[in-house]
Image 1: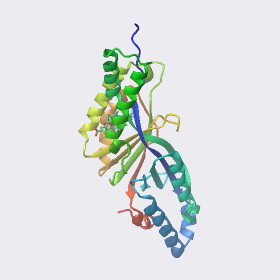
Image 2: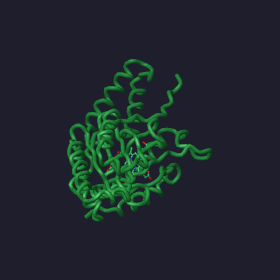
Image 3: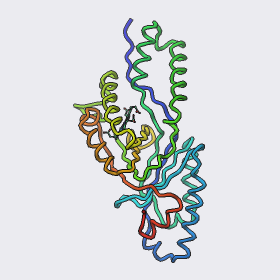
Image 4: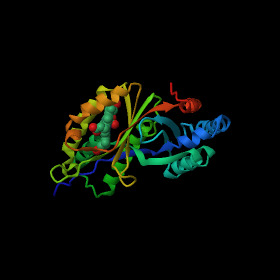
Length: 275
Ligand code: FEC
């Protein structure tokens, strides 16, 4: 019998994720006057307090640096519909008249399961099962459902409470010479293991939330990083660039960097202080 070829690693999904980047219309804002501004900010603060309920998903706001945008609103929710609801909730605030969306990103929190996919495939083949059989499918489903349950905290995380935030989208290369999707799964598994080893060296210094966006947005993954030291982003990403999975196969989109804003600190941003 021909040995069945395994290509696609299983993935575990969690929160639906939407972020929107806003540019503030500063001339308009500056003309609004202190009393109007204070009322507008209060309504945003109330909205943010209302949407920050971790058990049903959570929203967080960041003050962004650079020309790409001033504010980034991040929503973790149970479904795309709930992400949309959270977004509309913000757009309906009178404050929305003073900002416009410059970018957005849609994805789902994703855990790539290279190790377990390859291991189970081998195990089931050794048991004499065929991937087409009902027994294979049932055992496969059960194993990953159990794993999803064990990984609940990883696929349904709260928004990490760190001061600094970094986001960028990325692809795995599909070029003529180098094509991630043509490499045998065992080789990709090894590269992802090496990638994870580098990541683990930064344990305690950075929290990463990888989201999958194939079919949802223009890139394949969204990388969200959270840390109390912005230089950790630079060092981690730099070190990973030398690793084969990145050196030969990663393509990066634009990078976004910001600081977490607690709802009651929103006014400080408009006063020119984010401490
Ligand atoms: O094929 C795929 O499944 C690719 C999805 C994927 C991308 C990706 C990119 C980055 N990561 C970064 C940081 C870390 C840190 C840790 C870590 C570990 C993993 C594991 C998988 C994984 N990452 Fe990844 N990363 C992707 C997938 N990554 C799978 C191993 C299992 C796990 O721990 O989830 C260590 C986490 C820990 O153990 O504490 C940190 C950064 C990038 C973007 C830069 C780059 O060069 O790729 C930073 C896409």
